[in-house]
Every structure is written in structure tokens, then in C-alpha cells.
Image (cartoon, rainbow, N blue to C red; front, side):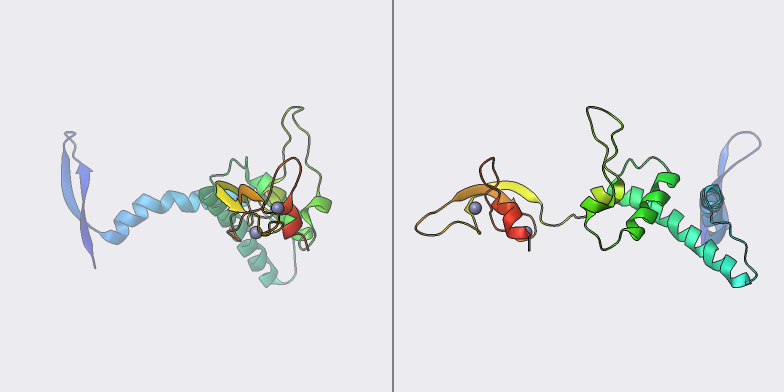
Length: 177
Ligand SMILES: [Zn+2]
Ligand SMILES: [Zn+2]
């Protein structure tokens, strides 16, 4: 068994290092997460009765997966998604609308007259082919030797330049089938 040393407070207030198995140290450090998981899982859990016992196990793991996804999503994206309820609804609407273009799924909700709020499943729907401002290049769509066109907008995925201004949007035309 692997042993480590941890500080322990003595009765007189002083601290003394004592030996303890790693497993005990890890349990003490992380036991709160199990309670937190149970708490998060219980708030909006799927509570469907069924005669088949294994259905309940399936719902349990589905709830655990959603809570874990919520934690990972917040961690990875640094998102300000307000709570688990909003996340669950986003997952559900995202799955229901899977395979359809984002535009027809849900309209952005107007909660603030000056700043529109976009649902998370739409906001993160596409994250490829973003315009990036960079050095001047020839437009990969409309430029040729007789009629050269230069632009500073580059596609983050294709790594070629496209016109993107008030007169022309080669960026959009090129990416639409
Ligand atoms: Zn592209
Ligand atoms: Zn162009």
C-alpha cells in the first residue's frame, strides 16, 4: 500500500505530519464530489416508473451522463450557461432538431431589446470555417490573373482567402453547396 504524509492538527493547535495511506488522503480530498454529483443529478432527474428494473439503471446513467456533460461543457468552453435546467433543455432541443439546419430549429429569443440571446445549441452548432483577419491574399473564389482580387479575410479551416465586405461575400458563396 502506498503511504504519504499529511499534516494533522494537534490539541494544542500545532501541526504534525502523520503517515497515512494514499487512498485515505484521496477519499478525504474528493468525497465532496460524490455528494455534489448526487445533488446535481437529483434536481431534474428522469423519474419514470417501470416494471422492468433495468430501465431505472438506464435512466440513472443517462442522468449521470447529462450532469457530467454539463460539468465538462462548462469547463471546456468557459461558457456562462446559467444552470443545469438550461443545459438539459439545450441538449433535448439539439437532439430533436439534429440533422436540420440551425435556422429552422429555433428563433433567437429576444430577452433584451439591445442584445439578442441565441440558444446554446445554435450558438455552438457550427465552429468550422470561421473568417479570420490576416495578411492580404488573393480570393480563392473570384480572383484570376486577368481580374485579381485581394482580401484580408481567411477561412480558418480551408486556410485560403475570400472577399468579405459590403459589396461581395465570396466567403459565403464558396461555402454553400
Ligand atoms: Zn472554409
Ligand atoms: Zn472573392
